[in-house]
Length: 121
Length: 121
DNA sequence: AAGTCGTTCTACGGCACGTAGAAACCCAAG
DNA sequence: CTTGGGTTTCTACGTGCCGTAGAACGACTT
Image (cartoon, rainbow over all chains, first blue to last red; front, top):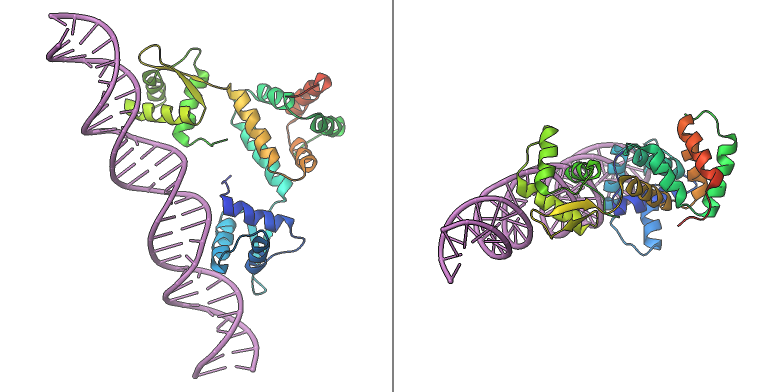
């Protein structure tokens, strides 16, 4: 999976946090609210790069185009975790280190999830 | 944590797989065995960049210098997983997606680890 | 037909990385 | 002390990604 640059991530955050599809101008406003002023074309460029990378999809039936995230943020992050895990030769060792350093809260969440967790996919 | 480029990762793999500290020449041989011919200075450059990034440490009491990984590969990967997890706002959601898509084997490993897992670091 | 808004094209600077030659360094031998 | 050879550091260049945005192009409204 391609990685995200700093601005790209900020844009994805805006898209992920929004309850509805965003136009480049909406994203621009979000960033403006966060103290970052950028030209509209900049957002358009970033959005199209993001689309090319498969992170967002555009609805071109309306103008300005509306962009939506292809995957939920949680799915994206989980996928990244899997990708990272896959880098290793010894998965068990990695999982051990991983679990060994999670917070108690995360551990509790994991226990609960694994209680019923069955076939994945 | 800084990320690794393609060559940098190959070098780290060599360092991680080796049972003892490696010199740049040792790394060069490893890569050669893998069908990749590079100048010795290239490996020196990469190794020094890796040292600057904190991935390896050098023993300069002998020449040629010997390099060792600062963290075990499993620790490195686990750390990356934590870093990725930290990107998210909703850790539980991410963990759910993560656990939801691990293999049964990985899940079993996780259950076992969490059975006794206590204080994390 | 023209104006206005929106999108795509093109472009440039910076940085990380792959790659390696040139220069500097250091130790051993003479 | 001087020299030589191996070792390391300096310097450098090409490439590709990313941040950034103006210019050019396209489409719809009036």
